[in-house]
Image 1 (tube, rainbow, N blue to C red):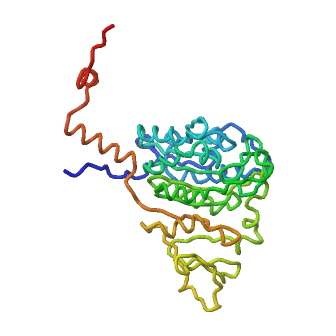
Image 2 (cartoon, rainbow, N blue to C red):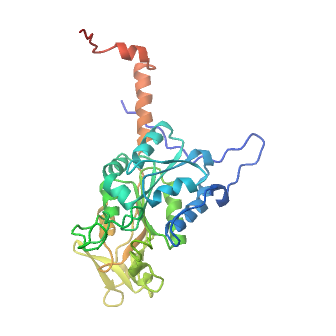
Image 3 (tube, one colour):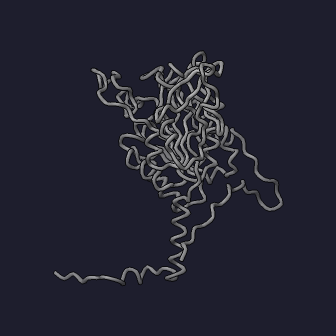
Length: 356
């Protein structure tokens, strides 16, 4: 017999009492009475501002939105959102979010984390939340350093980078966060930059509307302990030539004069100049909805200076969510076995009497 899988519910509207107009929320409604306390010039301020700005678009009342964070500078995020929230323990935010979503699938659940919190101590937890397609929105701030603990090497720090914990230069190669998310079968994977407000708003908005495991990497600057980590390709005067802004169904063209592109040469990507024997017809066309993730993996790996850095939505595929499948199993069990009874459960099956 086919298993029952509940239909994915539509995004709920902000309810209003009978006879009254729907409640209309604005950015100011999501600004808490706690003043943000990050270092002056920190990229976290921009991420917070864009999140507060787009939150009314989702149609959820504030009491049905939850922000869960781990440890690090990003961990303060729930205090600054006028919603429910948890400031959890190091690396375990996806675990709390998984449990919350399983018990309250009607909630919109966000996980705010950093590159160290997510990919080091929290690596196992974040992997399995994405593998299970838990309907939570993970936003990872990547400044390629441990900022709160004052500048130690992180899983995304560059090879050879000198930090307080690697004074001779890091001997470890950095993790590619998007590749990790893709390998874990996250159904929505994207990247943005703290200094690109329009792109960041678009990515957060699309992440919020996706049903399933959502992973957004935000390249963020720690101007105290790793200033300029992404500056070589994000600065206004160079970013057009060093970044690839992805658009669904469009060829992978970049450059200030849109005269460069990405194509496959065999199985390897390469940068070509349009007009030097190549046209847009020779380029890869971005398809975020492809079930085959081969090109998505390629986009998760290519990076400056050999390639432009991809920004935007990389993968966006529909898939049954963990909470919907769980609800389906419960429905099937009740149908086949009747409502559960705790007393019967405790005294049924294999029991033992222990004597001294």
